Each structure stands twice: as structure tokens, then as C-alpha cells.
Length: 472
Image (cartoon, rainbow, N blue to C red; front, side):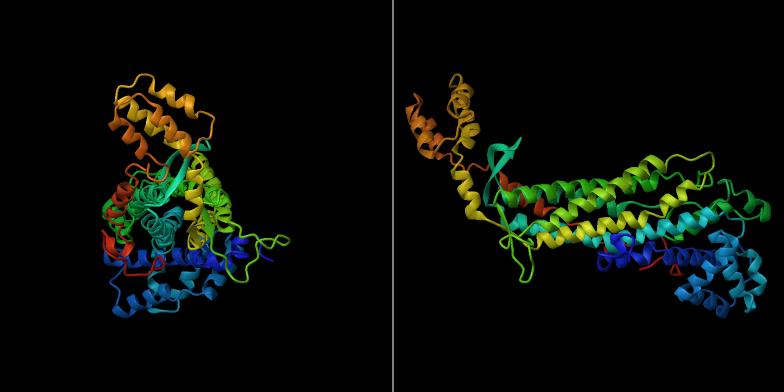
């Protein structure tokens, strides 16, 4: 009865993202921020009286123990308020009214606009989901591609340009290209710093300055956000400019584009019998054709990557634009972030599952190369040009263009040339199985690059949050 496959067919894969993007997670994240802010108003701004250790622990436990029942209570309050952040504030007021903290209730959500809390909670969710879910999944794919590059760095295969036989390469080198591309984007993904704001209704700290003019609110907001491992956007309207988040989405969009390229190449290699998929006992490839082992994981990945990227394209079109300070249309768009991440996770997981089953059909690759001796024409005409043989290109064009030649045809042609024996020797040495240039060295260069640091290895540039404002 699920409305979308993310919570139905693919729920086992995507359920981990509920910790970051579900309605429950969004309510919990904002409640935790309101609690953290109350503590900071006491500890850092001196506006709230000094809290006792027991009171601080009570607040921390309220944040850490936020439950599904708490979320349901807020949703019930929202039926009256029709405003989710106000419902969170009312929920916290009710909780604190029965404690020694009742006298601090007026400081809840002090001087803020809802978007201070909303944006900050979502920035944390995007960051934590990246570190705990997306990067480990991407690293798995990169490691799998590294393994394929290493195993098959010397395995020659026919490369095609415009879909036509071109020159030989190695399968390992083709996989190394994807490793290099993904590693570069992985670094950008992991180093991206998310921005948020904590500056009131139009970004000028109006209410904060009016209510407490003696506080340095610029410094307070910078320290507060950096304590959450976020970058403060000090110049904003009611919203942060979404440019920072969109840069992150565009990195993901490019990673998805690279993986789309991978899926389509792997699909073609399988179709050309260059690759085989390991059959799994019990699986069925067709309801009527029992022989089939279909590349379904790569096809699934391709479809889900397309959906995720379509959402990212909508974010880029929609989120930079606001009616003056803001309108509500951005809020409903931001609530789909989990949908985009869900389709990414389904796609990346499918691709990883498919890569686990890929094996090179080395005999098939060899057979394909031996059937296309014309692919050494590039090397042959270049050898002749280096020997100052006139019309070298035209000679090879006449011999090979639009024709399939055999080893015998090629060798006879080489022997018929009126050139020095050293030149003939170079021509004889050419073979589709060995004419692979520096493919192996290129693979080794890619594999020797410094590996990416995991989120845990990078460390945090700012102090850790004393409250669990996000998951992880």
C-alpha cells in the first residue's frame, strides 16, 4: 500500500534515510535545535539564568530521548497551529512547564524565524546523510571499480568510437577512468561545507537586537552554527541563499552522470559478450526465456539515477528564486530532499550489487580483437609517418576503411611495402592484442593516487555539538 517504491519495493534499502529525512527526523532535529539554543542563551549569551547541572541534563535527555510519541504529540498540536515550528515550541513549553525550567519558557525560540530552525535542521540532515550513508556507498563502488581495474589492467579489449571498432584498450584501463572521475567528485562531495543562518525574519537580527541589544548577535550566530559544524551565512534574507546547497546537489548530479555513463558502458559490454554476469541460484532472468541473465542492477541504477537528477534539476531551477524575502513554495520542494537521496541510494546500491557479479570474458574480448585487425591501422600509419613515408594515412585508409581485414591481410600488406626492414619489423610487431599503449601504466597511476579520507578520518573543523542535533 506504499505510495512510492522508496517506502514500498525499495524500503529495505532506503529505510536508513528515515533517520535523516523523515517527518519524524525533521521534527526531532528542530526540537533538538530549540533546546540547544536555549542552553546557548544561558551559557554563551547570558540572557537566560545559569542552569544547574541537573537542568542541563534534563534538556539534553529531552533532546536525546525524542521519541515517536513526542513527534505524534507535535503533529496533534499542529492540527491547531497549522504551523509546525510553533507546534514544536508549544510542545517544549508543555514539557518545561512541569520542571524547574518553567521560568525559561519565554526564551524558547527567542528572536528567531522558523527558517532559522528549519534550514539548520535540514543542513544537518544533508550533511549527516552524506557522511553516514552516501559516502560509504560511493566508496564501495569506487573500491569495486579499483578491483576491476587492478585485475584486468592487462586484459586487452576492443574500444569503440562512434560505436565502431577503433583501437584496442584494456578493460582495466576503462574502469580506471571511472575510478579517477569518481574519486575527484568524491573529494568535492566530502569537503563541501553546508551553510545555514541564525539571524531572524529578514536576516538582520531585528528582533534579537531589539530584545537583547547588548549581545553580539553576529558572533553568537557564527559560534552557534559552527558548533553544529555548519558554515554561517551572515548575509541572507529570511532564507539563506540556496546556492551553497545547490552546489552540493550539483556534485551529486555529476556523480550520478558519471555512474549513468558506467551503467550504459557496462550494459553494452555485457551485450557485446565482453563481460559476463555471475548467475545466482534461484534468480530468474525471464518469465519465458530460461537462459537469460539480465543486467537488471545496472538498468535499475540507470532509471533511479535519472529520477534523482530530475529532482536536482528542479532544485536548481526553483530554489535560487524567491518572491522577495520568501514564499512557501521552497518549503514543499525542500521536503523532497529525502526522495532524491532515496533514489540515489537505490541506484548506487544496485550498481554495487551489479559490480559484484561482473566478470571479464577474456576469451570473448580476445576473439573480438582478432576479428578486427583493422584496429592497428592507427599505429601502422603513425609508424610510416615517423619513417617519412608519403601518403601513409591514405595507404592505411585504402587498406582498411569500411573493411574487415585479417592478420594475414595485414601481414601481406606490411611485407609488400618498399620501406626499410626496421620499419617492417615495427609493423609486424603490431597486434590487436598488444597495441594498448600505456594502458597498464595509466591504471597503476590511478590506483596509486592517495585514497580519499573517510568522514571519520577528516576530523571536525569546529567543536562537536554537546547535543545530538543530528544522527550519527
